[in-house]
Length: 388
Image 1 (cartoon, helix red, strand yellow):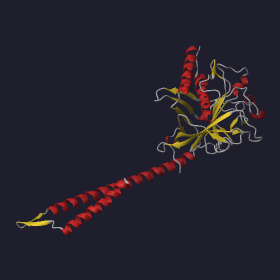
Image 2 (cartoon, rainbow, N blue to C red; image 1 turned 90 degrees about the vertical axis):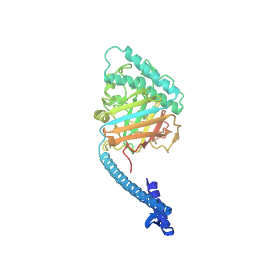
Image 3 (cartoon, rainbow, N blue to C red; image 1 turned 180 degrees about the horizontal axis):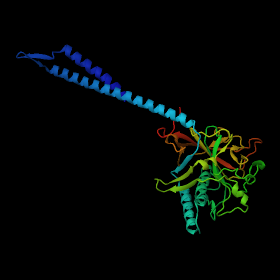
């Protein structure tokens, strides 16, 4: 609009100057039987004057529209600034998390469809009622974690390929842990994954069975359906949640996309978050760069006790230290809604993947596991909480 406004302003000046010059150097009227009539030059001068008048009206209208838009933009910016202040001052009480994996290659697509087929077969053959808790557990075991495990292995070029079966009689054979950083300093993380009770913890860290309720509710420790724990004490280690994460293949999308979906109500969020400092609460204002770490092919868990916000590593979240870039394959987007507020909707797109070198933070001892860190940048400012 600014370029058009500038054009009309100068065009109006040029036309007015042309009309004045024409009226000065030519006769615009003539006497015909005692009556003044416009000459050809006069008609041209009148036409130019009329055009100049219209151009002036047009430029004035454009100027008014520009000022109105500037006022609306300023008001919207003030509203967004106020919303940022409100959101940053609110505690995070609920969360909706959606991670889409788009443009899947044939190998991952076949893995996702095979997982869906096994899940359907399980439901068809299952005897008795299957509640929501058990249903969520079966989805994670049959669909969600096999896909994430295969996806991570394919990106990292693991010897275990994405197409290699990760299920045996409905059981996940290998552990996998995901950490979602909820703030810039990664004081608060949201873990989810599956860990067999017999997994090794770093340097003799106490195993979670000795501390009931110490493990994030997003971690599936004891698979009670297909792989029941022999000791009931494992059942109380993870904190109880009402809404577990899930995954499914969205065939309606073009092309088909795999979706990780987790709706965390107040109880689920409170029982799932781990914090470095428990006195620093999590804000509803999420970071501009959202980072997700996926641990897989795990032989050691490099964490301080069962708190996944305290990794025993030299570097995990700093992608420029002891890490190498991993080529991005396909497309990946995340949408997060905090506290069910439209003003706190965050849309992210994948920008970078790195594989950090897992080294113990004290003795510089390599950790026998693999990890990928995904970096998502905030986008879609029209629907997201903007940054200064």
